[in-house]
Length: 75
Image (cartoon, rainbow, N blue to C red; front, side):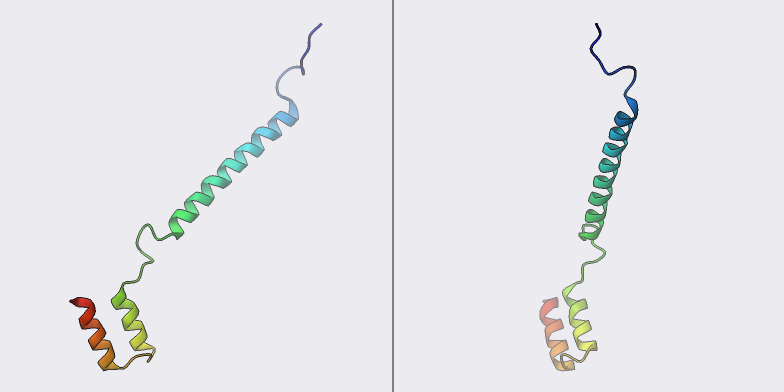
């Protein structure tokens, strides 16, 4: 007497393989999105001078304060 599940993997086996494949693809896409969004490429990082210039442009600091802080940053 043979003890088994028949021939091939059946419909539930195929669904299981597809589900595992979708999970793996989802994990890969999530990792790619996290790596791109983390600033590893350096495109999203602001320098201190850029932040200082933005503060001056918004009127948060005076021209004198801006020049002084910029000089401090450069030395």
